[in-house]
Length: 531
Image (cartoon, rainbow, N blue to C red; front, top):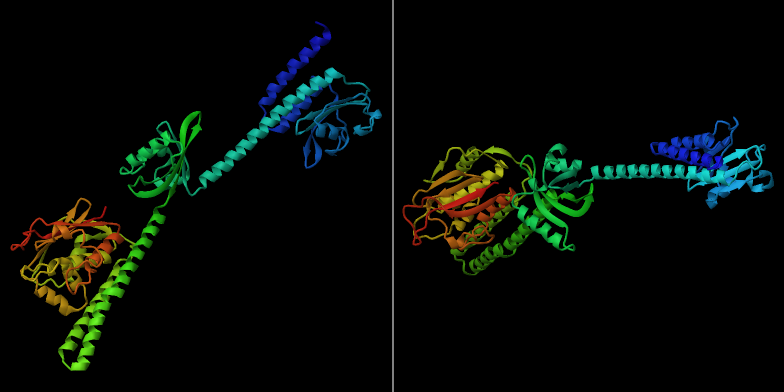
């Protein structure tokens, strides 16, 4: 092997070693410096530098130690030999710049120039005071060195862009209103801050958990089936509505969007969960308000019109005949209208949604409600250990008052057969004479008992009870069999229960009245679930 080939081989090996050093660099300035040092030390270029394009100019970034102190200024990127090299991405060796006008040497003493592009970044140029100082081998080695420089700065740019993208993505994810997570290998791989706010668990706790630890137990099987269907059918929807149970046992309603991704080389699920609890409650509130509007329209258009027509008819007859009993009928009709209006107002007031609740002593509210009802000979029994309930105390008392009045007024075992709904409706008026009359007809005394359930409480009596075929209807607006019933009584009870997001049902009490009607049924038991 000739000495020239051995020298070229040595230079190539040393250039590859420099390339390895460049790979460890974290800034482009370090790479430019290593490139120029290698050109000066290995390729033995006395005067050289790297210029990078910035805003239409080629700006010096690194120069050799032999560069004159005054150096050179930035040049327009489309001017001279450097501009031609950069724009055309083409290398040049100029044996004698004095023969080329476009070379535009920085220093007049330069005679030859080597010019190599750095991809889309800029140019490398070497100069010599001697003519024909550079040959094809010099150009080949310079191009090899600059290819290493270009590759490394391209990698640095890519990493910088990736870091910037990741930072923007992280900012977007962490600032999202939605809970965003990645779930794979049976546990959470990533969660944003909103996940911790939604569930009450810390990041450290969540990454040790599976998604099924958060899905409400009543929704798990349904969601599992939906996910299974999606695995079979790629076109299946990937949006789900479900409940999640948080660390403090609080339940939130969410809309969940899930898609399959590859994360750290493994199959995973990217999920986005939006808390729609308040939106769902607003929708339910509007639905309840619309329902009440329909109920009010029904009372105004139908129930109030009937007694009004009666009053008008008897007034006309009274004016024609002068008989006094027509005035009595008119008074009864007007009283009926007053009763309907008061029930209607009570339904509007007590049916409003509950915004503020607190822990209230249930026994204290029970005894307060009992004291406000005309109970006649009826008696109250309160079981021990009723405890507290999360409620609006005033509305809870109104609910109990209606149930107590219902039990007392329906305690009659006489042939006078009114339904329990009639008694509540009748007793809910402000007319004390009507209430007293209802109590007077209560017949034998009634015992009303209040006790606790696993998740709620009950109110029962030993009266004649409610027929089984009537139990699903008693809470319906307008349901009554009495001629003067409005059907609003137990509807008010149901509205208060709904406003608290509770449930109410009717069944037989544990004991009935001593004298049963022909159906021989026990008393009624109203069970209120507060869970």
